[in-house]
Length: 256
Image 1 (cartoon, rainbow, N blue to C red):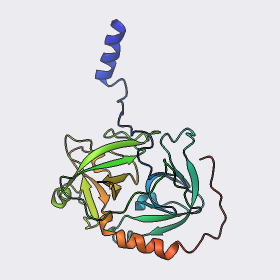
Image 2 (tube, rainbow, N blue to C red):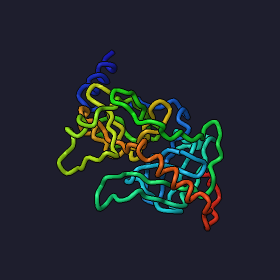
Image 3 (spheres, rainbow, N blue to C red):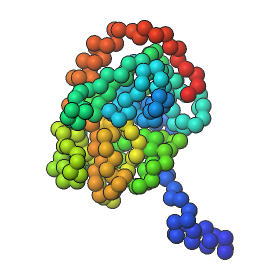
Image 4 (cartoon, rainbow, N blue to C red):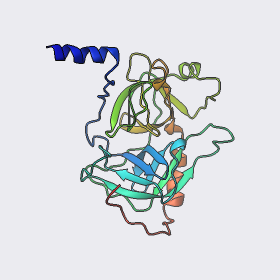
């Protein structure tokens, strides 16, 4: 009894670290991609056997970054994974001159083999609406102001908020863009600290994370690239580049 009281007291005083229980059902998001190596540790979304969508901050280095498909626990071999080098990185521009777009397309060195655990996510056929509940997943902390990455894929549900509400929370040094969509608010699960975390609404890919504002202040919505505005660009990139096969032969990797 005394030991139990001690454990409770330590938790109340902050001596015990907060627990983060928002773990996805394993392999319930077969489009989720773990990007690692070459200075990158991010998420992305598989949209085709050769193509991944992610955010600008996650742009990797060709043939240095590996895309791990079919992942849940990134520290162990679960037997469901395919590890494939990123062969080509295509930025939507401009970003540096005017940070209005945060979107990168990644072409794999080898086509992914679709399985029960590896499937593409459909591109959006419409835009998300304020009040709609969407689902965000990534390998980041879901505890505000904690930065430890997660070995397990995390999932949260967030409401989409209107543009004006989002703009009202922007710090002065950030620019609002029509290419942004915001989700999350006070009293909801509003923190996913993981670059390129994937937002899915009604079974369609609607966002990759741009700014994780909700991890600094749970009352502020986080910002995602509004992918419904980029479907034409994404399809055009895939049409123009898929026929050009990588010149460097890189086999599917068996270990991360």
